[in-house]
Image (cartoon, rainbow, N blue to C red; front, side, top):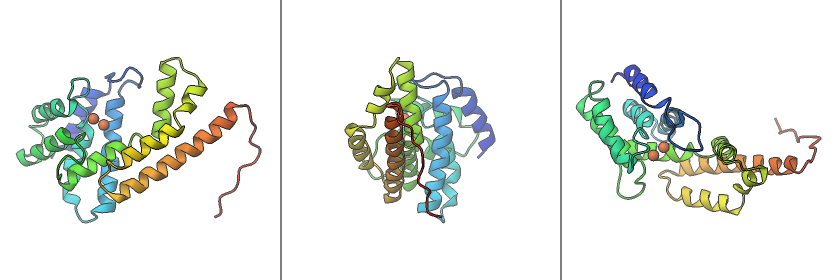
Length: 209
Ligand SMILES: [Fe+2]
Ligand SMILES: [Fe+2]
C-alpha cells in the first residue's frame, strides 16, 4: 500500500475544506489524521499481534470522513475512496478500507471485524477530552457565545452524553479511555468555572511522585 501517496491525497482533498460552520478549516483532515493514530494505538493495546491491519486502519482513518457534507457521508465516502485510492492499494485492501469508511457511523448495528470496530471507537474518542474543549470553544466563538455558554456544555447533559456514547464503544479499553478524557474535561471545566467567576487559584496541589 502506498501510504505516502494516500496521505498526500488526503491532504489535498481535505486540508482546505470547511465541513462544519463552527469548526476550523481542515477539521476533517486533522480529525482523520488523529483518528488513524488513535486507532493504531488501540490496535496495539487490544490486539498486540495484529500489525497486518495497520495499513488499512491508517488509510481508513485518514479518509473516513472524506464524504462529509454529502449525506449519508459514510456511504458517499465509501464510494469516493474506491475511486480515489484504487491505484494505491490492492483490491482486497481497498475493499477493507471502503468497508471501514462505509460503516464507521453504523456502530453496533451488526457484527463488524475488529479493524472496523477500532476505527469506530477512535472516531468517538477524538471528540472527547482536550478535543471537546477545543470544539466547544470554537462553537461558542463562531456563534458569538460567551463563557457561560461554554461552561454550560459541561453540565449534566455532558455526563449523559458521555454515558450514551460509552454504550456505543466496542471495547472496554475504549470506555476506560473515554472516562479518563471525561474526567480531565470536567476538571478543566471546574477550574474554568472558578476563574470565570474571578477566583484566584493560589496554589495547586502537587501530584504525588
Ligand atoms: Fe463520520
Ligand atoms: Fe469522524
